Length: 247
Image (cartoon, rainbow, N blue to C red; front, side, top):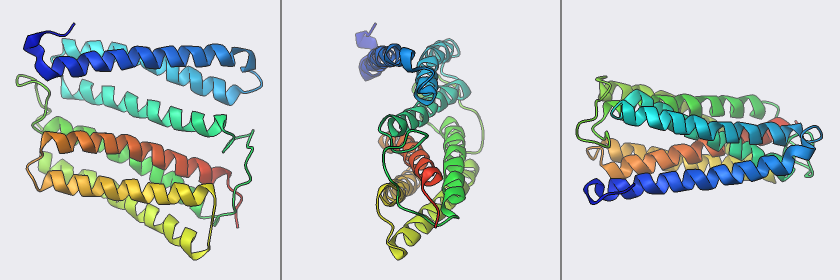
């Protein structure tokens, strides 16, 4: 329950819990709807199960977060499960609309054979960057509470380590867009590649801005939102590249 002493933090926490209930309701309805299709559309059913299972996991980790006085490692795990939800949701949307998977309804444009492993690597390094970003945040000043512990790691050192996979993601996104434009590739992969590059550049701008401006809380929050967008964009690009015919 929100109290005046909690201030805006109370409203944020209350809003987070309400959205969790809404997400759980959607996940349950989706699973009920897919129950009779669980053998025919096993892909959708398993992704729906993954989404639903992640929600109680989040609730348990959230409780541990409170009991541990916002321990940065537990808070970080809470965030990483949210990123898993983003990945499951992205794949579920692609499968539900027939963009990828065994039940594709669309004819995808051919792409260079090297594109699929490159996009898979980009998705992998996106996950690595997010995990390292959690470590960096845990070392920084924004604990959510004045008395919350930090992980006592060197924030500046891990910021530079965190930047390494970010550079690799950027290189992969530029590589994809270069070939998309050079070979005139159209359709879903073109959109996925351009979106991936746009999100990557946005994250880079926010990251550099927060690093050189004293890590303001609003930019940290924007960077976390950008991490969710990056995971979705990278997952989508890798998924579309996997199912696209090769040149």
